[in-house]
Image (cartoon, rainbow, N blue to C red; front, side, top):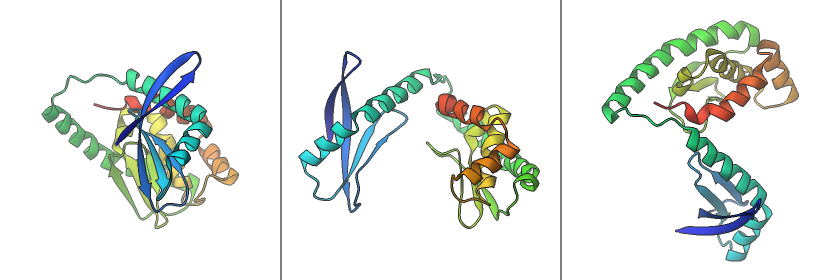
Length: 198
């Protein structure tokens, strides 16, 4: 069931639709999709008062991230491809990614250290890459649409997780030693990642 949260921000009144999902979790969480959909995840038995308190406490975070999602959505290019054309192109990009990512990983591995078991190519909505505890590296094929330096940053990022399975200072120091401009590439993904569509 969709609800409406009215919030005043910088002299403007916004009506934000949100959904409440109850589960056996112990804590509350808020997520905002790339399309601006707000989801509140609440422990079972949470009252309307609990929901209102969460919205009130997190209202600045909610409105700023919601506006950011809306701005990024407005910047997304409008495709004139048919579904058949898009599917065919995606297939070709995925095939290219399966060949390209292992080559880039092999190139950077001597610089980052560690060992990976395999590489998986995925189509994820919010993640560009991941590294499992078993050493499986996963990459979003849409990175093939990004500048090569940005793609390389994500490869280095995940390879560094083979040595540091966290985002500790030691992890970022290793990333920087291989990719000195990683902050620039990370910001590019944050600003333009939603534009990587066909």
